[in-house]
Length: 78
Image (cartoon, rainbow, N blue to C red; front, side, top):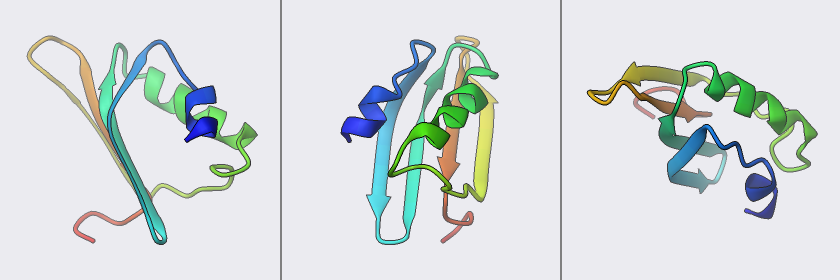
């Protein structure tokens, strides 16, 4: 969790983090859609998160015009 905290991005608000055997999922709110891939690109500098493959990625705009996202290393439905 310390590495995840070190990757803090002022445009990302994580609401849920789920790390289990062989998978991880992050969900939250982004101020802009491009904040999510920019935040994920920082994972390459992390020992724990570097090389992680994300198989499911979704962005939607909510009623407040903020981007809701879910990024997961598990396929949807798994």
